[in-house]
Length: 260
Length: 313
Image 1 (tube, rainbow over the protein chains, first blue to last red):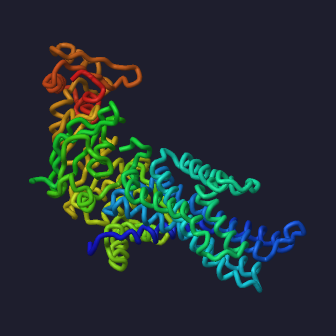
Image 2 (spheres, each protein chain N blue to C red):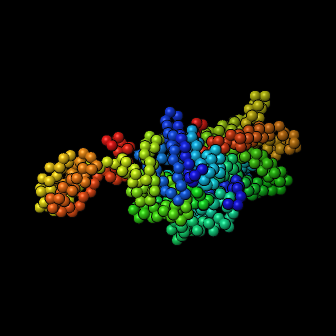
Image 3 (spheres, chains in turn green, blue):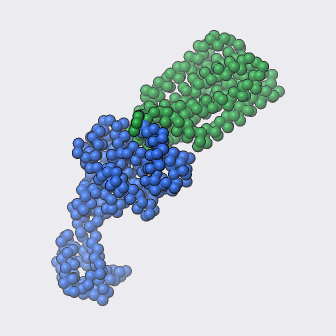
């Protein structure tokens, strides 16, 4: 026993679990198929190909960010409740690793999926945006905004997973929350009003994609619409803060708010 | 602090249900303590309390002098095989042990060496590089015991380690338990339903019922204190069965019967413990050869049943 265990040990093992056990590659494959279809349609379809290249890049980036965040959320929503149900959590709780260290390790592993998803998206954006100088900007904005969203939602998913009585409940709640965030972005554009704007700004996913569109399609300077990033950053701070401050007390053998 | 494990008034309440009620005992280094009890007696809850996975509602315990108020330090000194432990199927036995050693702060290279030793110690060296998904139940249990040893614990808590194992697997596991206590000098708390296991390996027994210790002591002490001899089966040569019955009928406090299924076996019922000896002496005095005499109510399982199912004591 030379030193205390580090959360990195959990992160490495959890990442290995994700990628070697097959879940990560399967999710990434499904994600790349979706991106391929979107990119193909954006580049060739007669209905969609009137899109300017910058709009095609924006559309693909939004799909990449949204779906990348979705798969990250799903993995994190399984992280504690899934282990509880598979009977592997108890052996982890029997070690000196702190509950907070366990959560941070699992969060890091879940984010490896987001990182991989974004890397997979780069060639699509590169091909769609060839000849347009905004590809570099799209990649930088995508990784920055997407990472904020991914960390926020992964932290949220982990919290739900820790608190949930069952893995099904955890996955269902996380998926429903993501749908609730995703659905408003699919509604027809609302007439310009303070209510429509407020709904967009309150929704971390909606406001983030609005920000990306403003910069990539409308050509705004990246600093002009930063206010749209308030809700993603607030979501990150709240979910991350709750995960670090409150999450550890729910990492236990029995799920639920009253578990002991 | 005298014992490797000291438990005082340990209590756990779930809602209105008292799962463990004022449990107290002490165990010395190298001692194997059997934790017996019917389903719901509180055995698994006790193991989980001692391993700090659950917080006690009341009471205290100490492992090698470390108080239960310091759960992280306690976890460094206990090794645990949980009752229904799950294993990641895609990793090898060695990798699994390396990971757990790393969780205890062991450096990577030292962890690999330790894993090799531990996996050999539970007779899994040949399958060390195989994925756990290919392991049998017995192999997984032994791997779990190896995992419980990665931190060289002072106290090892084994919850139903032979559950679901075939007789050979049970024997192998009990051999490992003996080695843990005998060679390593660790205190072992063995929770089990298998009473013959307790008789074989445990130096002391605690029988739990309804979360309380109903009796504790050595196997002999518990058996003698609780299991009053009430009946026995006497086997004599077939031609002398009637003679033996006549002799026994004349002994005060003794009654007997012979069943059709086993005409050479006389079931002898006695009023008190000493009457068994009197009955046997009378048969021998009448020059009836005794081929076998097996006393009921003198084994640990009789004590267990008497204490946990309300049988007359």
